[in-house]
Image: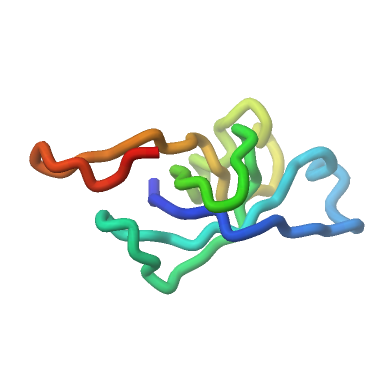
Length: 95
């Protein structure tokens, strides 16, 4: 899993039929301090994430194990919206 911030929505009017109904979001990866790492991914949104929200992204075969992505050709999925995280008792992020 990776931490990321939702940067925007990806709109595709023509796609594989099994992908119909899935929202696709552009997610920029962030590090433990909340800084962008330069990496990004287009991920199917299974939790209703919105712009600028910090999310957890699963990729690879794990991306196809959510209810909304089961048996769909997905390589990345937003599987959680992050409320907070801490490192060694120091809060690094709080929604």
